[in-house]
Image (cartoon, rainbow, N blue to C red; front, side):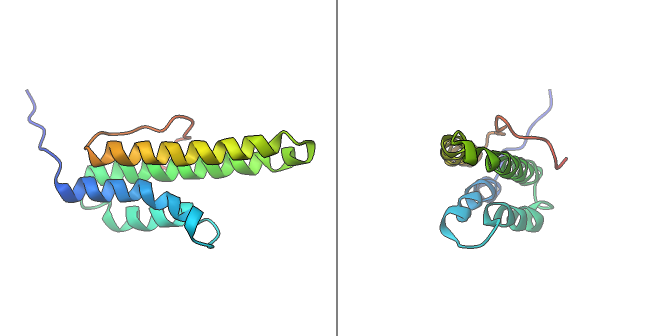
Length: 120
């Protein structure tokens, strides 16, 4: 039987920050902040832990996917259906980021639904 070492407090904390930093796009008036913030944390901390590396990639993949989905909805705004789609994506984004943050903080590998695996 393989012994799995428990995750340290710092590993769980930084994995959680990878997810939570995506919400900076709601607060900061910086374009693409929801992608840039997790990218910075992941690139700095990925060498320290496999768990941080995995969750950072997952957070980035999800935020890039959400950006693509939102960009696809922009033309649909002109036929009105895009407005509720954009609102729904924004709400889904916040809810799933919070869930992922809680799971990462408890040491679980979280996989976002609808996330494209762009970063391997």
